Image (cartoon, rainbow, N blue to C red; front, side, top):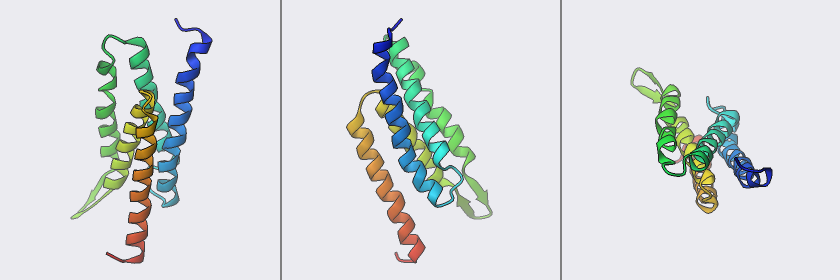
Length: 138
């Protein structure tokens, strides 16, 4: 059992995960996508929490619980993909959910730099792609 002071670092990690998830979620929300701010924040937070619990409670084999995040995210992502005739929508939303989960894992393991750089790269891709296709340029 951990004392209260030992929970400071995990709590900070959870708050960082929520903040980083909100960056991607805000972009999705601002473009009226099906999975927006709340979804991305919760995915990032949940991934971070599962990672922390895995590390803290199962130090001899943290990967066992941690590995279950990916199939769970696959299930959520698949629900955001819609096929209508020859048109498929929701792929970017699904991949946004996937990268958000990976960012949560990175924060949960303490890899803040990787998480922040990933948010920056993902945001640049999402914002620039939207601008590119909105204006009709190639």
